[in-house]
Length: 557
Image (cartoon, rainbow, N blue to C red; front, side, top):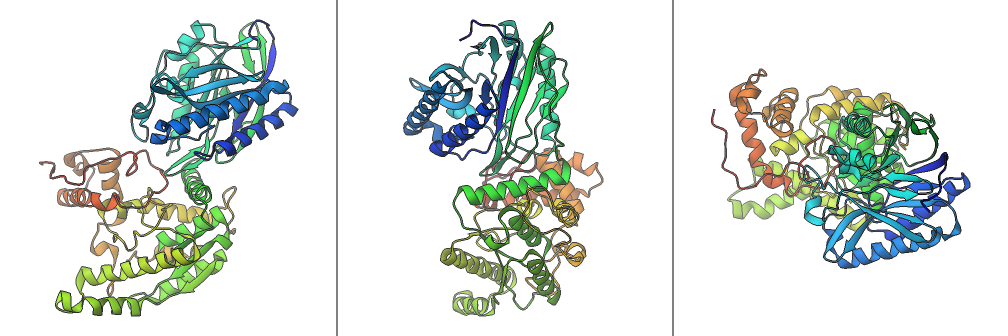
């Protein structure tokens, strides 16, 4: 198989959306794509990291039954390649003795022709691969139909030396299967890493990335090809499945990929919006929920969540409920109704007076009188949460929770109340970003979105003072700094881990910074019980930032 020489070949790139644990489904997806590529004369079809099982597997990969099923699925797919069509380069967990490896297998001519292991195991941020995988040796090239293929897996190209080693061992080009999750600015970082490896190895590089949502993570695809001179000659689209055959030719300087399509890659608000929609859609669909239900309060957060839900699932799978109490303003009622009408969703109004009053009466003797203060406010929120969960229990849709990162950071949310729910599409968006994405969506209908064109969120929602409406004339600024101030302080504390003096140097009041820091620490117990949500920033809560709940440390200033 590796003895002949050739001067051209066709490499097919399968940027697809696996379902974690659905080995049969992923196998059939792969085979369907392979059959389509066969009609185009492809020699080799490449899939993303651990595509056969889905990625990331976390501790599921330690289960022997999963390991056996993955091997069997890989052998099944290999046997199908006996038809003489394209070979397949498939990501699969590979168990050997007591170890399991993050691997790729070359499937050709009815057999597993070669297996290579991931050498560098990431163990930072959202990655925890050292916990579950054994590191493989530095990979050797794979001989394939007159070429030698270097196949470093994902993190292997983030470390110097591995690509150069493959080139020294005779690799003609580098094919990199990836499970690279999105966060803001990630694509520029990927380009930089890939360009550095091309310059180091003096070989062309194929970067094939996963697409789709998996729990909190969302993968944007955006696969690309760089020639040995560092020029990008193929850029696949982001935020969608994509299948592409690339043409390669050998000349005096080695192998080169012919110029192909260069798709525009979304950035900024557009990318963040599509990340939230993709993550929400796949969480609902891959877990088999018929749709979602959420409380539509007339505020900016629930408004954006409702729009994202319709964009992800369609109006017929979204149920919005207004849950008014005596402090709900007439403008909130009007705004919520306008949003629901613009989206075309089912919209119900369920007053909570009887529920709140009844619970208050139940507690009156225990509390020595009717609930008041925060107790009364939280009782309203928890009544709403209970009613939404009841609708979910009876009708089946998942409850969306709608707290933004600013509120989640400082605990400005009620456990078992507005934090009730199974998923939060805006969990990793600061309040300022919620406003920015709302304005963006009013002006744009991003690709693949199922909601309507035009203005959906009324201008009044974008301009009125934010309020929880749990007591008379309540405003968020009564309890919190103005959101631009709060967001900057939180960004410094959460994303950048700056010290209090460093944050004060940015123009913030020292007592305000210390207050926000205290609130951030004290709210850790709430965040541990919060619903999962789409990761957007480089440091989200849960997967990236893992702080203890019991924590007396405070910075001395």
